[in-house]
Image (cartoon, rainbow, N blue to C red; front, side, top):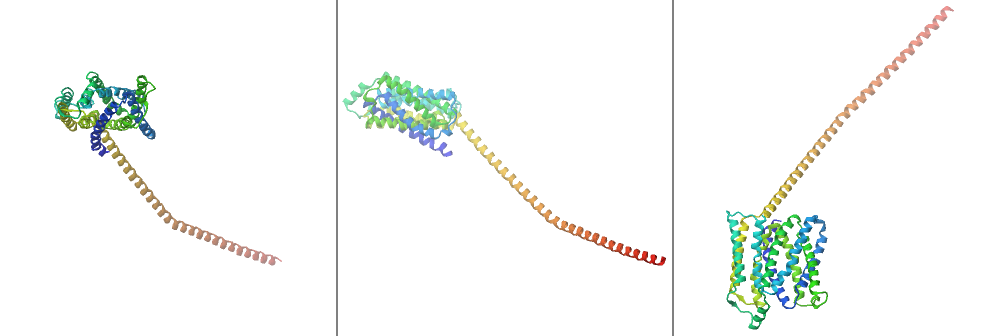
Length: 422
């Protein structure tokens, strides 16, 4: 348990942005090859559900009770999260992958502000850790705006003039940022609601499965309305689209959703989402190498600013503690004290049992000694009784003989007296 809370969360928190960065590039390539967003989201959440639901069924005996309040929260998460993913991928489709990643880097800052407002994060303006959190949030926000607004000169040319013109014609700098802003706000609301839900329903695996099922149902209805039931978009093939379905379904909706729920329960909503700017650097490299996107100076500067702000924010968070972490520490202390009391009670019970056994053994030994001591007395008593009986019998015999002699003498005297009379 200590290893999970101290080391493993940091490993997963760093690995998740790399998976998300690879997902952004993967989806970008698939969208260029004709993948439709609603159908992609349907298959993505359906695949994740097929993996997670059997695991939940196997572990159903350990699940906490599902109340109406928790059910409403889960349905809301399913609408806010997977339901509004359409906005994010619609924005990714008409903007550069690097731009979309830079905009989503605002999620940690806005999540921190929301956590502060709703008292999920402890902030004291006079203390250094809280000042570091606020400063890091402001720096990360500045870096995101620099990356999104200030392009700057091209420092790495990866595209030709023809591909640059084609990409420029695909971009829409009105709808794209609007879609991304909507998905940004929904992501912040999702993180805050997830933190509240995992406190009441401490089963991250089941929670991820429920959300994926709701997301699959919502996107199924939207796909039927938009695409209809006929068309090549519904068919699977051995192509980049199939890879995008399974990559996003297994890693993003399945694995990452479970990790997010677990880390949110342990560290609060800000810890997990604070590492998301790391995916921006990964996307910059892959975007230049694979997507042939030009690397501009403004985006590179913005990326370094965001990472710098992230470092300050994480330092402040490591120095302070959130209410979630305090609650987890209190629960651990209560569990430890409860275990200590249980051990003491068990030891006391064992000692009492030993004392009772010793007392019983001692009483048994005394009883045996009393029995052994009473045996000679009983034997001597029996001897005395038999001796007394013999004496009584002997005396009665002697008395009987005396009576016989006296009777004989009386008879002789009677006979002598009779003869004298004759």
